[in-house]
Structure formats: structure tokens, C-alpha cells
Image 1 (tube, rainbow, N blue to C red):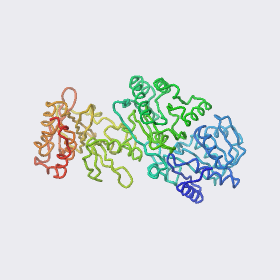
Image 2: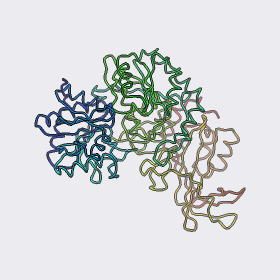
Image 3: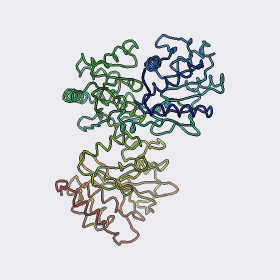
Image 4: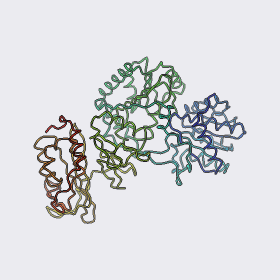
Length: 591
């Protein structure tokens, strides 16, 4: 029998107070590794001792087995209702079951459908699609609520949001009140979880940037398969590098997340057979339990899976995690990372190896684990010289959004961004979907081809402008995008320059852009191939009042720009100018 930690006792007290207040559903937010199953067991014990019925719904058979075992260890006597475990017992007050098994029992008029529960607990409650009343969870809750209108509902989760930040608590949500609020950052800070260490190596990264989302919001499986196939040799190199890390750092075990079943077996062939195992959705439950038990004993060092070992898997000794697959969901990414953070004797840290671009993909979201990862990566760079104008946190010359923390949230200041055409929210320049409304971020010139221009030149008034830098192939491209209205349409046109490509490109950039758009152009000219100066320049670019467009070679381009006046704007503030001169290594200036 385990004793509750102080924060677990406090969270349980908050649960009881919230459940007693009214019959609205309550959410217990306790991050990965906080001990949700133990807290739920203690709560369920009170119902058993009071001879009241309780149903605990969990997502899969492995979780049913684990949660029920924790309950037994705390002194409880549970029943299990799970098709995968071939058990359908309703004799005890407390029943653990999977949602599909319970719903099947209700539809087939089995005994479980006639029971009157006083409370339903839902583990991994973020998975409930409460906006669709035809889903399994909602049908179960509706059925038992009709049986007992005073029944209480308690959800438990380590990620209190869906998708990429949509809260599951609120007036229009299923859960009206949140308790516990035990975050991953707090658990790490108070030594209840180990600290994650993140490693990103561009040489060992599979490029999934061209894989699109399907209508269900998931990565297209065929495109994933094609990308994996085209990177067969790279996968082998990554796994060879992984074995070197595991041996040299004396690490216990590694979770490996792959794209497809075939990808899993490709990874298996590149690892020591006697120390590796694959678990997929098709792995029989009996075999899965044997594999996990061997992993806990250290007999298996590499656990390879595809979308299976994401929640409810407890192999605390494992101290390494390898992403060989992209994650479209921030929730999923955080849950995967959480698998490696649990405490274990001798375990000091969890190494997270991202070889699928997940940190880059999710870095714009306000999650403490992802933010900590980004700050770790940035701390390895020596050019932390740009102070954020809003919070004064130092940022890398390559930073696109400030990494500072303001009021316990990620600073909202962007050095480079693009706006969503649907909700106008700022997004990272590499983002393909808006972080707020999830709309696809379109090419700013996409609608220009349909513009109904009637002559070879047109003068338009600039409504707004955006300027940003984009890094590619060890070079930097500076782009400017201008918004204007024409015949009732809101259109954009963009110009881009790559001054680092050659001296000719540098001079072209100066003559067509810098000379007119930037104050004191002679100061900037010697430094137009320097990343640090280019980033500083973004803050001093003047926006034209009108632009003249010219039609040439079947496309429209910017011919001339006109400004409100020709007077130069104030020069660089002395402190920023001094910072640039002091912190820019001469070697960074190819010119």
C-alpha cells in the first residue's frame, strides 16, 4: 500500500469539495507522473467502503489492468469489464472497464446497463469529444445520467486541452471546474519527475515537412510511408547513433516511436535482436504484457511501437525517448515525452532525441515542456544577443519568437511571423496551420494570379506590411509582404532577397530594397550578408504608402515603391548598435 504525497492529498480534497458542491462534471488535472491512478484509487475506496457503485472508464485493456492493480494494492476489491481481457464482472461496487466494452454491454442489455452508479471516473479525459453526442463516452455518460440524475462525473488527465491548446474546461465544455492543477514543470522542480534533456541534430533528422494532414487532422499514412521509404538509410544511421548514446551514457532503456508497422520492423532490423521488441495495435495482450514486464526488468532495452505506448504505460526505468515519427497533436507529443520522465533509482534525467522535427513543429505552443526544450536548444547557441522589446529576455539571432516567460506564459513577441488570413493571429513563419483557429496558412501570393488587373501597371495603396527572415541551406532570405485592396479584394504581394547567395545578390538587395526602405543605408551595406545585422534591420524598415505593380512574364511584381517622405528615420538606438558591434564575431561576417 502506497501513501499519498502532500500534493496528492491536497488534490483529492479539492476533488471532494468540488463534487459535493454540485453535479457538474469536474476535471482533475495532474500531469504525467503525478500519480493519477493512486489518487483515483483512494477516491474509489471511499465509495466501496460506503457501499456505493462507481465506474472507472479507461481507454484500453492495459490501463484497465494497471489501474485495477493499483486499486487492489490500496486495499480495494474491483471488478473488471473488458472484452480484451475476456472479463465481464459486475459483482463488486467498483468496476474498471473500457468505454467500448461498457457501451456494448449497454446496447446488448447486459447487467452493466441496468446498474445505478453514484460516480463515473474517466481517465485520460482529454480524449472525450464532448461536442459530438454520438461518441462512445458521451453515450455512456448520457445513459447513466438518465438512470441517476445526481450522479457525479470526474475526469482525470495530464493534458487539460485538446489538439493544440483548446481547453476542455469552461462554460461551453463538458467539465465546468478544474482542480489539482499539478503541472509537469512543478513536478520536475520539486523532484517528483526527472528533468528532460533535449537533443536535436539536423544531420539525424527525417524531413516530414511535406507530409500533409488528412480530413481527420492526422498525417497522411501514404505520405508518411513514402517519406520513411525515401529515408531508409537515414533511419539506420539514427539507430546506430542511438546505440552509441545508450552504451556511452549507460542508459537503461529507450522508447522508440515510429510512423508505421513496417517502419517499426525496419527499426527492429537495425537494433540488437535480443534487446529489442516491437509492440503494435496487433500485438496480442498476453504478448504485450510479457514484453513490458521484460522491459521493466531491463531485459529489453529498445521498445519500438507505433501509436501504442503513448498513455498509461509505466516502465519507469526507461530514461531515453526517440522520435522517428512526426506528431500532429501537441497533446500526443507531451504524453510521449512523459513516458520517460518517471522516477527510478539511479535515474537522473530523461534524454529526448527528436529526429522528426516535433520540437520545431510545436514550438509555437504555450506548453512548459516544449518551451523548456526550445530554451535548452537556444542555450547551446553562443549568439544570445537580441533582447525582447517586451520582456527583455535574450534571444538567439535565429529566434523567431521570444523564449521569455510573462505571467507564467510564453512571451507573445515575434521577431518574424506571418498572419493567419482567417483570424489574423500571428504564427511562426514555418507554420502550416494557425495556432488559434487551425486554418491552413496560405501562400500570400496564392490569390494574386486571379487578380482582375486590366493594364500592365497598377498603383495600389499599402494597407499593412510584414517583414521576416527565413533560414534555409545555411543562408537567410529576407521577405517583405504588402497587403492592398483592389476591386473589393484584399490581396498580398511579396518580394524576397537572398543577399548571402553572392556579392551580386547582395548588391541587388541593396539597390532594390535597402537603399529606399531602410534608414542610413550606407551603414547597413557592409553588413548585408550578416545574420545579426539582418535581424536588427527588421525593426527599422519603412513601410511604403503606395507601390506600383508591373505585369511581366505572366506574373505581377513590385516595380516601384513610394514613401510618405524621403527623410531618414531615427538611427539605431546606441545600446542596440553597441550590442551588435560587441557580440558579433568577425567570422560571422562573410563580407
